Structures are given as structure tokens and as C-alpha cells.
Length: 88
Image 1 (cartoon, rainbow, N blue to C red):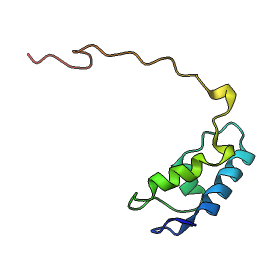
Image 2 (tube, rainbow, N blue to C red):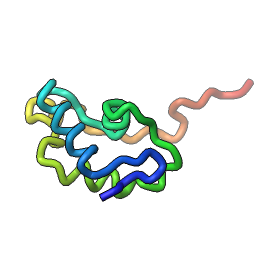
Image 3 (cartoon, rainbow, N blue to C red):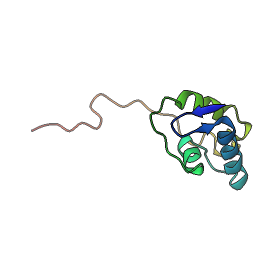
Image 4 (cartoon, one colour):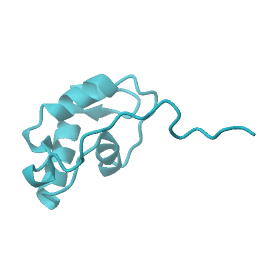
């Protein structure tokens, strides 16, 4: 099935790229940008992105490796004035 008409990318292309990336580096985080680069293409209009992401999520090799999960500490809320400079 064609997922991206602009770049002529199929679901088979996406799954092959994800599988190749996981096989070559089991620690990598696989992103849509990396899939496009692996295919030698670039996103164009973005209309395919929901289906592109859905296809990626359907691949069992997409999962983030266990040792890389939960590395980021919980987000904190910023105060109202944080990152603002007072004008003088």
C-alpha cells in the first residue's frame, strides 16, 4: 500500500527501513525523519504523516529498547515569570 504519494513510499518500504535500522543498531531511537533518510527521501507536504506514523507503530521493531525507557526525569511546571526578563 502506498503511504506517501509525494515520495512514492509504501508500507513495505517503511517496515523494511525500520527493520534494517533495528538490526544495524539495537539501541537507536527510530523516528520518521530517520526512516525518510534511510529511504533516501524527505517529507514533502506532510499529509501522509498520520498513516506514516501508524505504519511505523505497527512494526514490532519500533519499540524503544528497555534500557532507554524512563531516562528523562518527570517534567516540572515552570513558574509564571520563568524565562522572562524584566524590562527596565
